[in-house]
Image 1 (tube, protein in one colour):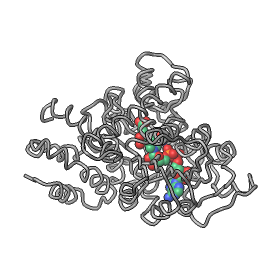
Image 2: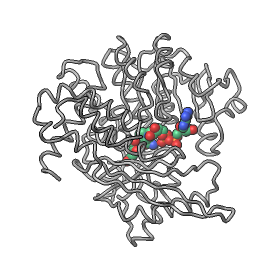
Image 3: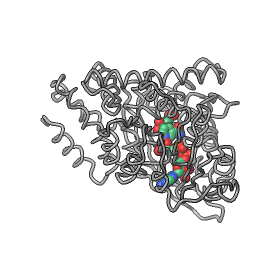
Image 4: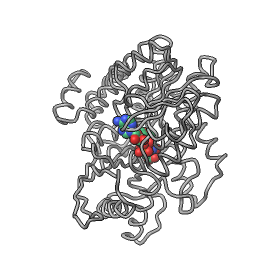
Length: 448
Ligand SMILES: NC(=O)C1=CN([C@@H]2O[C@H](COP(=O)(O)OP(=O)(O)OC[C@H]3O[C@@H](n4cnc5c(N)ncnc54)[C@H](O)[C@@H]3O)[C@@H](O)[C@H]2O)C=CC1
Ligand SMILES: O=C(O)CCC(=O)C(=O)O
């Protein structure tokens, strides 16, 4: 019987060798659970951590498809169904060449606690494929999505597992996958996927929800100190779904957003990023972010690398691109330049060293992804509610629900941090609040 957090970690790492991102995500959670395990020593006997770190089911499958040159291509697909203690598995699908089992497991593990924090009836899961959508034609994307769903459809369902988008998977891909699911099952089962189009079961605000929610969470953190976003300078990384809507909301709340990036580089615009131009460039034309400078001009400039944007002086940093994009040096530069708030729009965008620096720096508020980016999955749960009721809500009503959910998540994190003697530690608050909710449900359901 493992009786310390360190021995639990050692056992989990050995059992899941070669999966550094999963180890990192497990470490970030376990390192904050000491006070709960002190209160509940029975959790060791009940193997609570062992159970939670072992996915209920892991599916790996071949995805064969034919490209535009008539060549057969083979990719690897994944769905990791991590925990159904609170509801059907819920979490996105990522299409990116870096995808492997360890990355999907880190994302699925995070998703368990994030989904628990929303207070909604959703379990945790994640999936994807090592498919690179960049440069692929629309027909190739459709062929890939159809083949992916031809295996995935056996494992999902509105009461079983409900995938959605993530990196490389947006409305277009969800459409192709939904179409194939419908064809294979002969059922219009709207609740099987979220992030659908508005005319066929989608929810207003779902496209905006992760980015909007991240900014609303940052706003809540500031409000707790008697401040707000008005007049603040904000660095955003990424230029995908999460980044662009984070920019939109930050600007609506009176801030100036000065940067954007993608895997090819970053741009800096001291007078404020033109979000409509960026949307057109990245979400419609799918071009590289550097073209922003040619198109918008003004004082905008290309930076030497994507990470260079963290060296620009700002009040607020919102990493919204991908995991481990903000390292210890970047954190040190942000702190030296006076950053006040860091809220993770992406999943685990801060390395362990960066997160530890922010957490231990007096005067810096650090909102971990589990809390700060939970607005996306929460609005997916609202989409599921609308599908179950065969209803569709207005933009205003749905956005008001999102704002209420983000306020509640903030309250849960800060009250839990206070209860455990670490006021202002949102990492500890988020982990313990999410963990406690899942564990209560898991234990009530017996050894399953
Ligand atoms: N879509 C959603 O609802 C949610 C997404 N997330 C997380 O947010 C992050 C972004 O996801 P989406 O915006 O949905 O994906 P997306 O595919 O729309 O955009 C990803 C963006 O990140 C950029 N990027 C990728 N690697 C990069 C790198 N190494 N350096 C700089 N930029 C890089 C891409 O070029 C792209 O602009 C991911 O970590 C995802 O897991 C978290 C919660 C919900
Ligand atoms: O909306 C969803 O189900 C997926 C959201 C997601 O993948 C995430 O929260 O990381």
